[in-house]
Structures are given as structure tokens and as C-alpha cells.
Amino acid sequence: MIQSKVPARLLTAIGAAILALALLAPVASAETEPAEGYEQFASCPDQGESATSVICIRSDVTGGHLDVGNKEVPIENPLTLEGGVNAEFEEFTPGPGGGLSKTPQKVPGGVIGLTGLTWLLEFFGSEALTLYATTELAGSPTGFTFSSVTIPIKVHLTNPAGLLGSTCYLGSVSEPVVLNLITGTTEPPPPNEPISGKSAELEVDGKVIVHLNNGTFVDNSFAAPGVNGCKLVLFGFIPISINGLINEISELPSPAGTNEVVQDFDIEFTARSNVYP
Image (cartoon, rainbow, N blue to C red):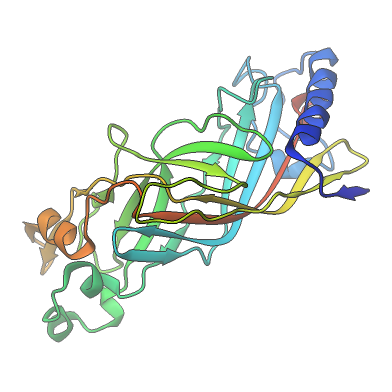
């Protein structure tokens, strides 16, 4: 196995060589099971599911945080983005079970921290007021490189007791939170100051799978909208809209220069003809 830290332009050249091999390979048939040694790409679309995807890609976010408004959500449970892209690393297409994994992250402060309604403790207790944030795609990721990617997201806010209903979101398909993630140094508007990510370590194994390990994406230049669809559901049947309350407590919408995301990542990709020979 080859391992090194290399500049982005050299990684790009290596990626181009892999892509060239993919384009020269025979067109894969509509298989449903990946070949041995490529099981991690099971959510890559096969030929029958996407005619344009020639590269299978998998990205694991292993840590970091998302700060929006005055709320910080640590990434404690790994997130996985899986699918296929074309030769230019565009036109992201998820296969069955692919896309971005819906992995809840616990939000510090819970429902009370989100709403400021301390009296809820008297009725429900602290355990019932746990709050989770689940990041979901609000559009297709674009601009995959070895040092950047753009991902539109929305964040689903949920509570095990159902106190927020089922439609409480930060962002939407029509008004997403757009993350322009890079491994370099950001140039945010004030009051944020520049922060830096970390280039990944390159590994190419004998199966011609390219691994980019131990990298860090950052962005602190994005804006975030207010929440929508949030309702305080009392006793299971009395819904009260609390969008305005949450926005006030959480300082939303929050302009560019006041938010931050850090994502520790591992990425791997290979030609689809290797996965579905």
C-alpha cells in the first residue's frame, strides 16, 4: 500500500489517471452485489440505476462540529455519504440506501436550550427533553475534489417524546444551508476569522481503491436560515408553532460570518467497473 501526504494538484493528477482507467473499462452490467473487496461501495448505483456514474465514492465524517447561530452540535456519531459520480466528479447519484446517512447527533441543552422553556421540566423530566439534530441532503453534492466539496443540507430537529412534531427543520430544499467545504484556509466575512482544514493522506491499495484519510474540511463563511415546521406538541395533540421562539433563542437566521462547520473525514473511491465487474 502506498501512503503519502501530497499537494492537491498531484492528487488531482492521480485521480485523473484512475478516471481514465474507468472510462477505458467495459461498461458494467446491471449487477446488484459488489465484487469481493468492494463491499463498502454497495450503495453505489450500478449501470441500470445510473448511466452517468463511472466512479463509486464513499465519504465518512468521523468527527467535528456544526455551529449555527448560537448553537453548537458536536459530531459524535459518524456520517456517511455514498453514491456515484461522473468522470468530472459531478452529477452525484445515490444508489439504493445511499446518499447521506441519517445519523442523529445529540444537541447540548436539549429542548430547553432550544426553546428556553424551563417549565417543560416539570411536566416531562430531563430525559424526555433530549434533542437530536440529523443532517440531511437538501440537494446534490457538487464539486468533489481532493480538497473541497459543496453540500447543500437541512437539519432535522427531533425529540424522542415528539414534543417538536415531525417537521421541525433548519433549512429546506428551497432554502438550504450550503456548505462550501475545503481543506485549506477560509476567508470568512467578519466577525469570523480564518480557520484551516487539513489535507488528507493518500493511499492507493492493490484493488485500485483511492483512500484519502485523516483529512479535515472546514467552512465558516456560510449563512443559515431560520427554522420551519417546528411545533410544541403538548400532551400529544396540542400543536403550537414555535418557529419564532426557536429563532429568537438560537439567534436565527444567522448571516455569513457567524457560523462554522468542521468535519474530520475519510474518503475512498474507485471505478464502478471494479465494483460491478
